[in-house]
Amino acid sequence: MRIAVVAVQGAFREHELRLESLGVEWCELRQKRDLDQVYDALILPGGESTVQGKLLRELDMFDALKEQIQNKMPVLATCAGLILLADQLSNDERSYFRTLPVCVKRNAYGRQLGSFRTCEKFGELGNVPMTFIRAPYIERVAADANILAQVDSHIVAVQYQNQLALSFHPELDADLNIYKYFMDMIT
Ligand code: GLN
Figure 1 (cartoon, protein in one colour):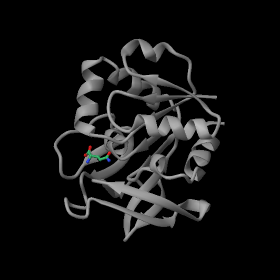
Figure 2 (figure 1 turned 30 degrees about the vertical axis):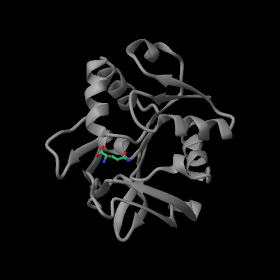
Figure 3 (figure 1 turned 180 degrees about the vertical axis):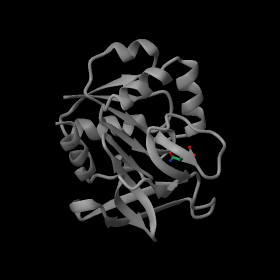
Figure 4 (figure 1 turned 90 degrees about the vertical axis):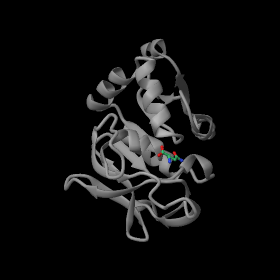
């Protein structure tokens, strides 16, 4: 198994280190020709969604990535990555891949409370640590999307078909359960 980490901006290195802890092979997608590599799944890291969206378009990677996601390649998206997948943003005119049938609010916790840590139930996995950094949350999901975690009654993790999207940053915690969950989606 080989996982491609989109590496144009943001916290991609932390994901790579987590994959290494699991002994999973990875490669980086930094420019268009990197898309010719052979890989089984994608990671869209946290960072700044506006910058990532702009760079992916400028680097001419956007359409090919969207097509891979639409063709059911498993994708793990964290924070800004969730914003890139969302069908709609409630507080921003922009939209990106629009492959995930959810409505997301950017910077939803405001400036002061934008960053915090907690530990909450995640699907069948029990409690997992969750680190939020200027995080979005999910305001609405389509009926066929599976809500995996909520914090203070806001949705922070959802799975829809091949897409696993999180408001928080599993790459910043030692707990590997969410990565293992994603590996199960791939195999
Ligand atoms: N606030 C960022 C955005 O809107 C996301 C923050 C993050 O990825 N940690 O793109």
